[in-house]
Amino acid sequence: MDEFIKENKIFWSQFTINNNGKKLLVEEPIRPDITHANAIFVAIINQARGYSPVWLYNKHCQKIELLQSYFPGVNITIIQKKLLVRKFRVLFIVLIKFLKIYFTKDILKFSYNGVKYGDIIYDAYLSKYQVATIRKIDTRIIKLIAFCIFRHIKIRNILQNDDYAGVLVSHQIGISSGVMLRVALAYGYQGYLRCGHHQATLQRFESIDEVYDYEYKPLPFEIRLIIKRLRTKNLEKVFLKVSKKQIGGEGDQSISDAFSQDKHYYTNRKFFNQDYHLDSNKKNIFVMLHAFNDYPHSHFRWMIFKDYYDWFIQTLKFAKKDKSVNWIFKQHPSIKHYITKDISFKEIFSKCPENIIYIDENNQIDTQSLIYCADLIVTCLGSAGFELPALGAIPSVTAGDNFYTQLGFAIEPKSREEYYDVLSNVSKIEKLSSQQQKIAKATYIYIYQFSRVRVSVCPMLSLDKGRDKNINYWYWKKVTKLYQQESVNFLNEVQTYIKDVSKSDFKKLNSFKEYCTRHNL
Image 1: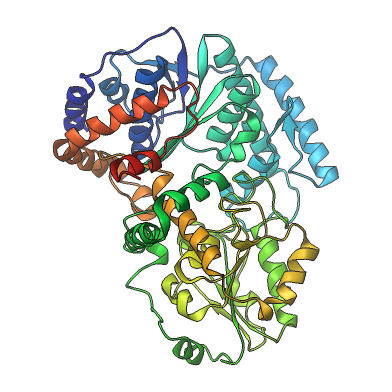
Image 2: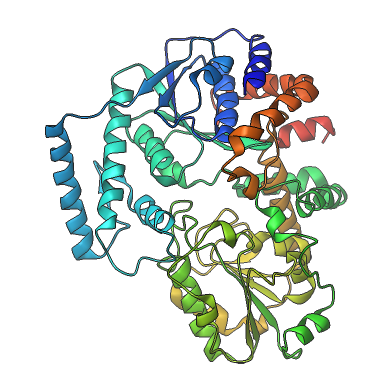
């Protein structure tokens, strides 16, 4: 780390700290990859808007010397412990909130001081206790409610006791980041969300409802603009380039789990059906399972079912009664990162009709196989719902709000009745039209390229690498090497992003405008 701190000081010494009197509260610098990416964008915001960074700090944080290598004399704030009397007062509120949840059985409606937190509590429970669903309301929820309310109070007090413009977080989910973002927006401050690493984005929120605007979500007018600017020939060319990059493992952190040479790759539907003993006269309906405890509620505004597990169980229940098609339940490719202790897939699929099969995590097929083997994709709100429509004109059915909703290529039921009605007619659903596939391709391009900007000094990390317990020992060496190789490119990137963020109407960084300028489109 010492070598990196030295390199980092040299680079950032090119900038003079801009101070307009306003401050930006930054989440705790815990993980090195998140700290590094946050610090870069905090510096960009400082240069663009003059907000001086103040980092939340505790005993688990990265060294202050590291933060000072980005910002000389950086400020930190340590959350002070509350007096015992105040703690008892808050704990009494926590107990009342829990009792209300216990008797109503409705976690999602939980709020504090008018700020909705039920979705965050629900998802935090699934993640912390490694379960697929909440089967009953138990006392473990009390701890999460307390953490949420204390976090709310502490962040509110910090913001209101000094001259802050807003906050910066790396996630809009989870209690630490999610509550921090919502508190700021609820009390009239700005919220900045920094997501991604070697490909990243910075999003600026001004209202609390915007927290459900997924950072890589395209708006319909943006998709129309991409199709108009790129036209058919260029659209195909860009799509092939972006999809090749994604499938090759150079894009999303989780993409290498889905597309891998280690997995069986089918290019012939007949061979796939033979290997899994499926009737080739029936359509193949792929149900793409989610990582059940990967925050089902707090990314988007609504979903038809109680959670991912409920969606899965109810879909399987329907499939058991429908012999007209082949139902293939494909496990999420990154499931190893999201352990669930309360279910057994082997047991769940032990007594299914012969037209239902389960592809588990140990016998995965390359997701590209679905281009040739699938007739329809069913997902709650997963990326397969736009990837397969783009890659193979395969229609998709969703069961909730998502980041490609209302773009014109997915089938989007709004209720359970509509959902089951769609499933009842899956054998009649045909491939997408050329126009629908074009929209899906434009969506694919936007999500995986134009919604993000390059950050040359952030290493590309897989989910495995990002969760490595020893990341602090090797991460900074990778960054130091990138500083030596990419400093000129990175400086140009920083200058471009500062210009964009400084605009009064700035909402989100993306690379589409820069692409059009570079290619005279």
